[in-house]
Amino acid sequence: MTYILDEQLHAMELCIYHGIKVQVKGLEGELISQMCLCTGSQSWRRGDQWNDWVWVKQCPGRCYGALNGRLPWQLQRPFKIKLLNEDVAFVVYWLALALTTIPENSGNLDPVSKYVQAREAPAAIALQVSSVGKIVGCAHVIPEIATISETGDGRND
Image (cartoon, helix red, strand yellow):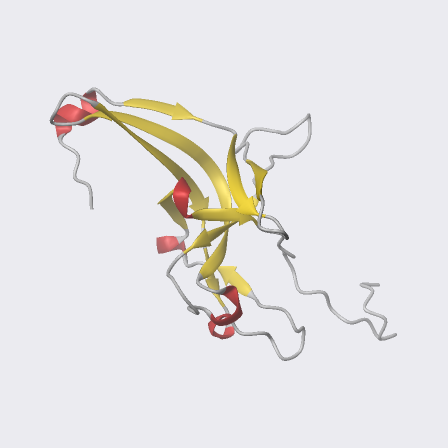
């Protein structure tokens, strides 16, 4: 835990970003860069806002079943804080504000959909700040559970 003195906050420099680059391992072990975008409440290319989902490492090992200790979070604002420490040297913290999720069924596969499911976190913990270093890649999230129509073909008629 890092404690910040009031004097350090007064001298703080804050920079807000619209994306972060995350290094992930490719299929053959090579490092690949993924760009995770985030516009917050601003529009993206004259359309709606764009806030990518990312995988955030919560704990090591097999925590949360098939999620392997990771949870999908929706980026809201990546930012950098630059502080003066006691030695009068600058220290930089790369952080991200994100909407969090909690795993359903302890992170195990849903018996019906065969997908791992997560839901929005309760309002008290929905927005959290985390180190950008805990982001391990972009996540591809299916936001809603599809309903089966009367014809049984999976279309929402």
